[in-house]
Image (cartoon, rainbow, N blue to C red):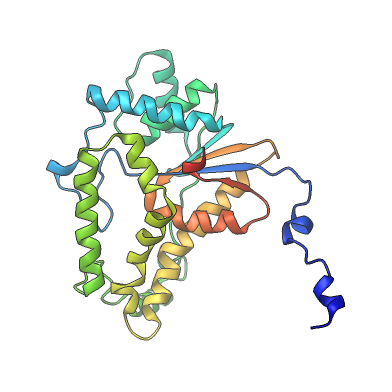
Length: 274
């Protein structure tokens, strides 16, 4: 390499892609589902479920809210469908004092932050995955046999060595939550290492079906859903001054984190950096 090339300045891509442009700011908050709907592959037994409604946990929720409030959100996006009229009716009743907060995190965290920052809207940004859209499309009679061939034997129940270690790890996390304050749980669950390894469960078990059949199934199922969620969050960013709090189940956060880290459109604030 010539000395002239060595001396040449190599630009940071953001000096071109962002420059001095102000970006909407995003905070991703990965949570466990307070109401334990148990719709995911891992089910938490009743004796291991955290009761967020008891007095001690309610004090811990206040501590968690105080921490998240450092972000000063102007918009809140949650794991709900885009028609949030039913949520707003619940929120209005809570704000008026005629209704107590329900157990789930949208109300325990989202509604409390809405009230604190005088926000008048909550944004549902959830979506179904591509495979569901295809299976229920007008051409479903044609597409269903193809989809069935891809998803054959995909059942989230696997006996390979790594998956069994994940089951052991998930049970450990359930036990840990019972004796750990909520803010510490959220710090742990939103740390880079935990998020990265958590996503790893998707890369074993059913992912290994066929040659690339398992990979195709994951792309149409889980990855596509989170790409759609990202797109809906992108659609609610209307100002460089927006500060968007994204409250979702922890399993979504690693993909969303990757997307927001890669995009020059947003500035991502990590939970543990508040």
